[in-house]
Length: 92
Image 1 (tube, helix red, strand yellow):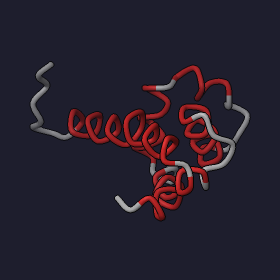
Image 2: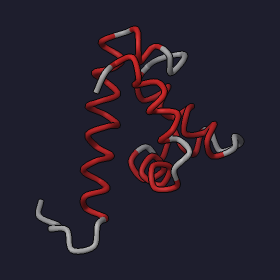
Image 3: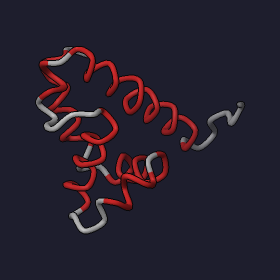
Image 4: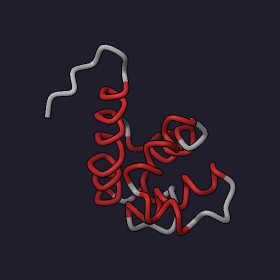
């Protein structure tokens, strides 16, 4: 994925119910700590906390932040979704 679009992608994903369920499941403590926020803002706060950034725009300008996003959120979300797909193998 082109890093110049990563912040935008993270924002779009934050509007998806399945992505927010993933964040709540995978990062329950951060999700709970931001419980006073609307769900899309809560998703943004969890992304910032997990990636160690102040703003999602850093995902486009900081290669280390982008790497953290890809490894901690992007890949994990893809794996989580694959496990939620009907008929998907649940091998561990």
